[in-house]
Image (cartoon, rainbow, N blue to C red; front, side, top):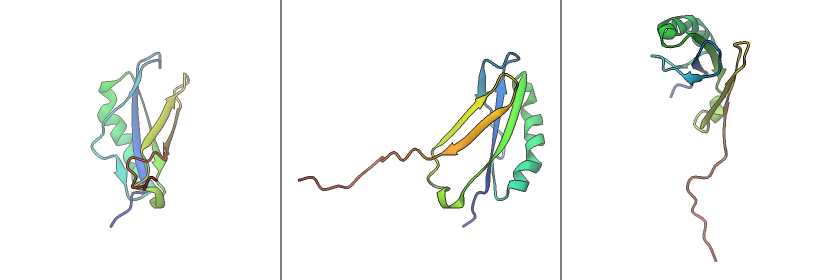
Length: 100
């Protein structure tokens, strides 16, 4: 089984940076961080027409938590910089606990 080492997050914003949304890209997961970094400018070019301002970031994926990540938390600052991270919420979806 191959592991994911990086995830490419691409965000498109209005010119004022007040309205932002995730933009889909053809390839968003990578086996190496270098592959993600190499693809980043091409992915940004592919979606350039979908927003006035496009920012992107490669997020490192911990192979031990690869299946546990359930959230991408991101924020685009007024200066155009992108803060983003992958998170595990620790929410139990199902449980098999015997009750007295």
